Length: 227
Image: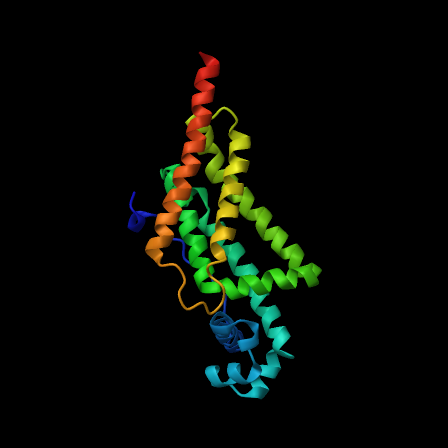
């Protein structure tokens, strides 16, 4: 299966059923743009008003100050990420897709997240240290995603005949998380020369190759022990 043939995983947006919700969503979209362009220092009420062409009064109707905007951005991020993961990691979406392609798709998608929302993710982690509600929500999303990944990866690892499939799953998940965290350091907010998409694909291919080599080793160990 080629990259173009992989199941598409669109970002799930929060519903915007009325005018107020649409206005608030537009303000948060602008806030994300400003964060991505220059970090939290670049986000000001004045810049939000200018770019969104919204009056100060309208902005203060939804947000008390700059910090409340950042808080709302982070909350929306958690909610939309959770909804996107539920759809994107659904077993039915990846039916018939090989393990290597799922791993590659995961890496591609998470790196795209770093490109689009790196500054928001940083703000999210910072707020989680200060805010128990945010920390609890992040832990909830993380737990959900691990469960969804387990449904996708574990049956395929078991089908490979790995000697210790549960242990292998945990290690594969750790490798994916660690690899993405390390790579994400190349995507700080407003970096002018992040890695190219081709470089990301080559990096992802190397990570997947390493994981598959580890899994193959487990299969060889099992074959030796049973002979």
